[in-house]
Image 1 (cartoon, helix red, strand yellow):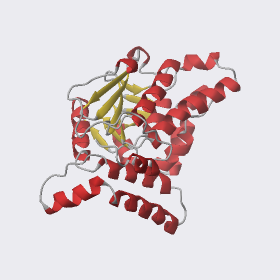
Image 2 (spheres, helix red, strand yellow):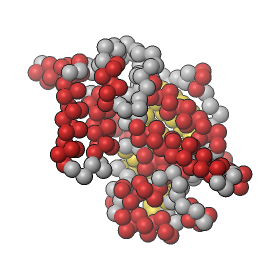
Image 3 (cartoon, rainbow, N blue to C red):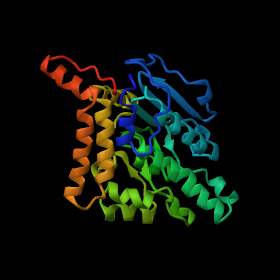
Length: 300
């Protein structure tokens, strides 16, 4: 990918970092690779054909989010934001039992009740969620089992959720006498009907994958042995869309959800399309359409 429009990318991606090395067009790895400095103990970071597969690998604890895993997730998403060769991210859990059971409960007893808890909530979980939501690439949660507490809060920040038939979802923190502190009480009522969200949170209820789909929490449910295949099909469909267009769409949707004025929201949308119109990808898309061929997008 060329870097001619590097500054323009920053206009639409507020808070993004594009100081990473730019890659040439189609300079993607064909087999999963992990940079040496991104090899973590319980988090797998693998890049394959422009997709970063992030796997929480802590099966003994049902992929619980330990202190180290939380720090590693922040490091990983920071790197993903800088890496222009990455077009999409898939977040999942190791094995077929759990996406993530949530935060490591053993941490709670070691945290200072005020300062320590504030750091755990704001500078760890909330920061990871912010990174996912503000990432200028689509993030897909591939939920392959139980998805509870902090695990569900991470999934709620993702752009799309695909789940296996065996997946279950719940915000269970109330059983510990606390509430979901990584945005669960804020995001779940925005993702599903408000009263249903209250019922789930106030009773620490678990729901199955098909109900999650009916509520609009999950995009697609499929057999466990087909989950990765269906996720790959989604990624293949995304490859047909300009990466800068996907970036702009995510930014506009996330930015305008809470904008009350339709005129103001539409103004944000117009600004995005005016920016896109000046990109090489937009020119390529029109030419490819007229020539009746597949476009060759370069994210420039």
